[in-house]
Image 1 (tube, protein in one colour):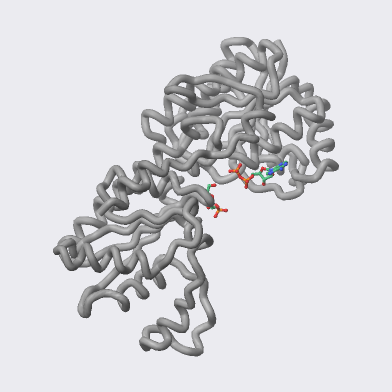
Image 2 (cartoon, rainbow, N blue to C red):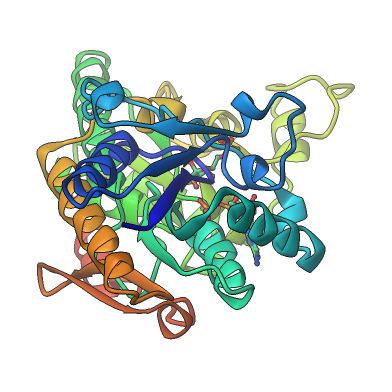
Length: 353
Ligand code: ADP
Ligand code: F6P
């Protein structure tokens, strides 16, 4: 049977190890030798002098215990050179020399673009969408998204308890790059009162402040404002630094800083009714570094089995995903052109108060 390879690329996402384990199980069942490429596309371009840092022969026994570990056993990386054709050709040559007849790429949008480039170099590839961001339009879920949302829900609930105790509104910043899905679903699940996402252009800090003050005036002194990290880029211009300097809240000589959750909370506090304290928490990398939920674990398992099966039947240039709740596959080229759809109805529901 043909030898295949697997790699993880881009930001690590919960469930990547379960996916690698499932690739190994399927390969073992079909007697297909398996190579693990290390550190994303860096391993394929032979970035490191010691070959052990670039790839490893893998057997199922070695991987028995990795399925429920957070992070990625194969390591991951960003490899900007890989957008360059010269490196794509180098990677294809490297795989041919290893006798690899097919590659499973586990990663987000950029990583799957890399897989498409390798297909164009004659390497049969199948992609598994793995990113906490959920920013791929062709699939209802990406691997790791469910876990990341659950981490945010746990954080918001814990923050809510202390916010309630002190009568303090709280800003919670979550990840998602240019996608507001983590923020939106976490806000909906926790009954947060305000959610701010990058899909809304030119949103105004004054508008958020007005809505927060209305909530406070109605007795909600522990309101939660969930902000997706990408939303800082789509905020209407507001000179928060001069505003805070004028109020004596930051030092004039303090270097100009971009708006972030802490400064945002400071501005909201200054615009709020006297005496109200507004605090901020950035959930950060805890969204990535935990064990996958059952939903992500099961998706990893099924998607990877499908990916190996496709390669075995010489069907390549495909991505696996979820449609109407079921695993499916479709051509990579079409899939990667599909834009993620923002759920405006859900957004309005959260922000209805
Ligand atoms: P993600 O896969 O999570 O979206 P990135 O966008 O950072 O993460 O992409 C991960 C890696 O995929 C990049 O560092 C690069 O190696 C590769 N990649 C991204 N875009 C392309 C592209 N257009 N062509 C080839 N490779 C790409
Ligand atoms: O793409 C996943 C992600 O966690 C994004 O949500 C976030 O913007 C980015 O990666 C952070 O990347 P890094 O690990 O390079 O800081």
